[in-house]
Length: 363
Image (tube, rainbow, N blue to C red; front, side, top):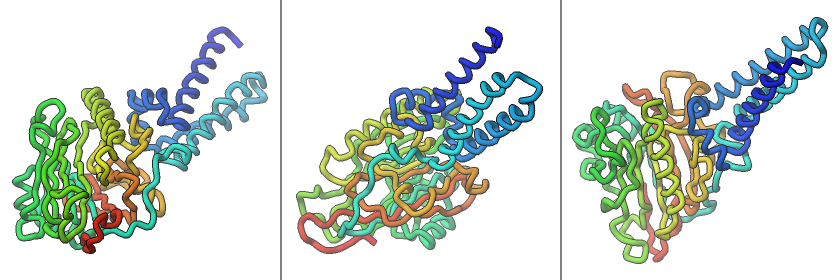
């Protein structure tokens, strides 16, 4: 083999080694770094598609090498076969475990909680939310909390008028934006159903397109009211991983990592929900130590939420509901709603038992 050929083979194995780190150890420091760089970040957005493509490419190279074995040096064919088989194996693993390998999928949720149920729905309507959309969400998902990335508060108020959400609309303030309110993108808004009782705005972890934090009106140590003690709710919308916003996207993910590290610092449950513009293989999301992925706790493979018009295997799961380990995940669902190119994603949760012995429930 010529010197140029040896260099090419060495470069190919270096690429495959980097790919192995991304696929097998996404939560490691090298995996997090590689997973947030162009074009790896974009490939990881569609792990099933990228994995299947890797299998096809590896198989094609292997078959071509075998077909030409009689006309070229057997040693050259062997050199091709090794990388081809490696690529196929990585593709199979990526397709089989789109949210991460079994040994690094993050913490698991609680089991056997006896507290009230809570239904949380995330829906990026692209600021097109209508009363008909809200009616469809209520009819099919019956949410207690609507986390609405990219939804102006005035539009949300009009859409929820006459419903139980009418008095519970909270939108991102300047404190919820990491670098000033961006032009042309509606802020994150949360609508809370009246049956949950009072909530109070808190200090959010800021993101590029706005974040909202709502805390229970009464701490767990005080009278929780007729509906039990509610969790803190953090609604977020990060920048997307497009070339001009890569730095903002990476910074958003780092801020979510801080939220993960601090998730149980207050001693109460937390729900982080929104359009993260990332899968749980991306950057620090792959190294979560506190926040549980609700989709991974539900039976079957998580269904992607974007883009809505594509078949399920071509969608990417970028809309998430993450919870602290003291929250039990009961059920998950997706729903096509209105004119948005996102599916709504809903998680049904069961909270911890009432710490002061008062009954009651949510929903």
